[in-house]
Image (tube, rainbow, N blue to C red; front, top):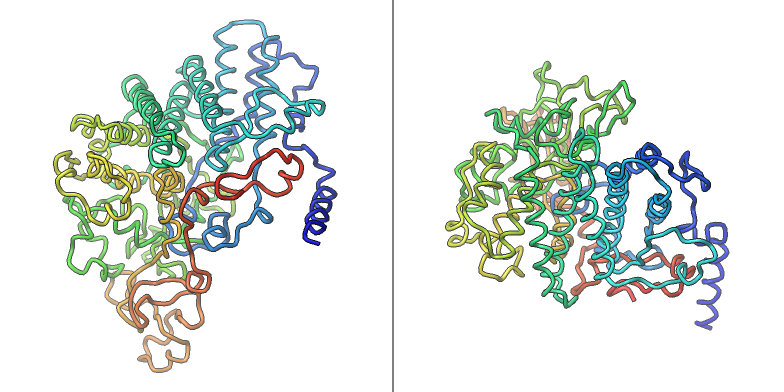
Length: 593
């Protein structure tokens, strides 16, 4: 009976997928170039590669990581840590149509005549985008099939092939990137893929792979980790030494940092390596206003990692865990107030009305990327601020981390990297000796698998990376490569509430909202507080960690507890069952078999 059910299910899936069988490999590129085109000139290659630019874009959220507290919506990661993800309901396994579009060009470029340097330049751009697509697949599934040419319907052996090893695929990705950095031209605007963009991606991917192999010891690839870390460091250093980039520092501290994420024009900014250019005249816009009190808020854990202005730890203060939102910004790293809304913040600078936070998502509202000028917030997908895709700060952090993981970090390295980032916001330099001799116990517990001699400085570099790159989409991959995925399953917290009643959240000394156990309790409040917005732990999605006081936490985490499965399983996502029905030779990733 059991076998009959399985066979019947397979038949249903096959019938449902008949119209799209093998579609992930056989879709023809939707461009102006046809099957009979021969890419005769470099101009043809340029036209075709222009269609690749949408494959990489900006990111302005750290969704479903420990950088967020409450968040609406759902994700594969959220479903997984709550035990709801199975191979039957998994989605994904996409991107193959884009790989095919790239291979379509690369397979025909031998027909192109003209300046060979220009031909190689566009081949490099195609291989750059293929490397990025493939590495995203590796990060998601581990082993994937490698295709470097267009697969036809008659290529049954290739259509039905099993995955290639991580080693083969990553070596192929690195070969693509090495070709790209050698042949893509260094000149051009920051809206185009240049040699420096390719080097930045090489630095990023090599760092990921090196640390992944180092900390994911079950792969038995630790001995190869160092070559990737060395390449990340050398690629980063080449950008540092030859790229002509610099960290924006006009002496305005947090404002200089803020302007990287809210400006209408970053085309001349020397910190921006690769830019998503928005403009009303071109009809290209974004939705960055949605970061603010719409679908999520940032976490207590992120807030606490920001240092004091003198470089000491916030978590060393007496009763740091009981400080209210009106207290946490005092003498802190200026980047804190550029990530989390400070009390007194006004959404319209011309109107003297401070914004009152809603505690529904925890209360630490994200303001990084939020357009400050109301005229830039014109509606849904109508914000025209430029958005960084790659910026120089990441390169500096990649170099520092690679050097630290290699055991080669020096004070000079720190001064050239983290020192420059901290100097922008008026923070003291990171000292190697101090980091090594005075290890943060909270960080050491969080990253307990860091056991080598450079532990102290590795932890501080991770802190700096989290702070500098917060809400730019790096945190998810960082937690995965460091093999600390259990942090995805930690219940997040929001602002501290000393007790039920009225609460000042704007910093003027007057209550702005009330938090009570139930709505009926509002009747017992003083008359002047009854008109304030109310939030009730028995009726909303929040409650207080200590019952009648504490940090805001979420009923969803109580009703659907998060858990982390030890071992490799949760570092990968399952292949949808429909794909394994189409190709029975595909093997589910580690832990999902």
